[in-house]
Amino acid sequence: MKRSGSITFFMELTIILLFFALSATVILRLFSTAYLNEAESNLISDASIEIQNINEMFDADGLKIFKADGWTEKEDNDLSACCLVYIKTVETNSGEKLLFLVELNKNYGIYAGGNYFTGHTYAYKINAKTEFDEFGIPTGEPLCSTAIARYEQEAAE
Image (cartoon, rainbow, N blue to C red; front, side, top):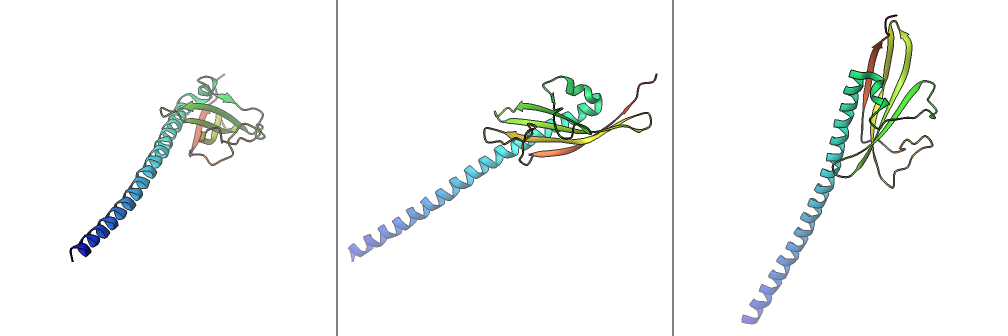
């Protein structure tokens, strides 16, 4: 009688240990997934804040912001007749690299007394696996994007 009681106890203990091991595996997987999601969320948040800063500076200062501060104008793109394209690479606090792309439509002279610029600002995560087209623009989906617009009055003569 005593022997069968100890076998039952060890079987129950084995089942409990297996259940604990399975639970621990699931919980570790959940925590690792949460960590990766947090890192991606922080990257998107950083990109969104930087895009907002770019748009606000463009709204305040116009094309002057693209003349300095690490911006490169892409003149050899297939849209150069109608668009201005500016690119800037920034490293985030976490060490990730983000590429910001601003495409502006040239609406010169369409509006009386000034020029109206419309376009989009895009943020891309770049790394060693990022593929670029022949104009140096990433081919994948951007992390985030937003519309951008500004009206500039012509200087009085």
